[in-house]
Length: 494
Ligand code: AMP
Ligand code: MG
Image (cartoon, rainbow, N blue to C red; front, top):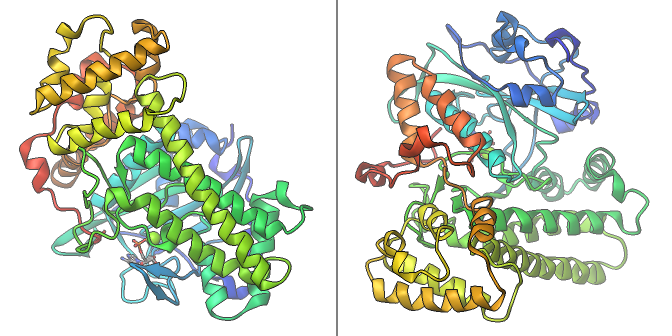
């Protein structure tokens, strides 16, 4: 375990040529105060947990003191936002402190909300406490669910006024990922018609993050295929757990297939494929059910940007890239079908299983059944005791429809000799009991905003690290959301 001063910085991104980034110092907030810190994430960079309590640690989040070896910079990227190409975005309020080599691998340490950078456009470079708490909690909740994500090391609150729809307080999140590379990094150089820089970026990505592809024939096609595979996995995870990202622009798509840039995200309460969690998304481009398709569209933007790096005739390369995109669709379908069967406690994958799941989801949609609670409750179903279905069928308005479905489900379970206790244990390991519902995050936010009381952040963090375990003292956190939860408007402004 290391002290802050002993972190082993290697900073590969900083070694890229000048046009890739700008050196920039973080700008401190007034009266910073550590609001949350995460020993599990600290362990990933070999940082001793006691270090989190040192004044230097908060000072590091506030950019007043940086560990030796840090080389802060903001990276440039571009992206398709709501379908429109925006030629220059970039780290507008994120500052990469550097990249640390640790036992568990390499981690970029990034401050979010640390002030204006050359890529801030009209923004103030700040992040508000509300959205910072949401990102801190959700990235760790996703990790608890086993979903690839950036991680959160800590967050500071402050007394800095930040202007959004109303005056809020500024905060900074220290997040970590093996790489924060986005599809948009490649688009930036492709659309600027700068093939040399594009190749430097491609070589960098291969060397530092996909080294197993070095030496393969047509390595950038392999890279593209691997990104399609990782994105398919990620989309299946999101759909299976009921997570809506809210702003799936190509600048928010991770090359490593991580969930990145938590903004107006939301977990489904009632099952609804048309659910739009981002109130700024009037057309529903990023509605829950649209995500797998959008993932494919975004991948085709990445494939376009990588075209100059593919080997062979452009026509042939385009054909291979299109085949990779078809592969994305089938990989998603496969991962989703397997995941859904696991949620239903089915061991084998049989003809008709997809239809069985769809029928259940259709009825859940029609009756506005809570997605998380229903699957968790389904695990307690007893194969030979339909009379004990009460609590389950009571979640539906149309109970006859549920009974008919449950009869077919039982038949399917019997066909593979399903055993109650075994099935329940397997289902409980994939159907979470606890998710970060908006209203739960909202309570932690209000306490922090109004009382500077951060205990609810910690409580939720602890809870959501083990979302599949029964935690009897925390039963209330698994309850149906209150009615006011539906009124919570989550916009892009963060
Ligand atoms: P997002 O959709 O939040 O991922 O942000 C899209 C782009 O806007 C990124 O380039 C961000 O860095 C930038 N951005 C968002 N909010 C701010 C802000 N308050 N100040 C500066 N840049 C911002
Ligand atoms: Mg973003």
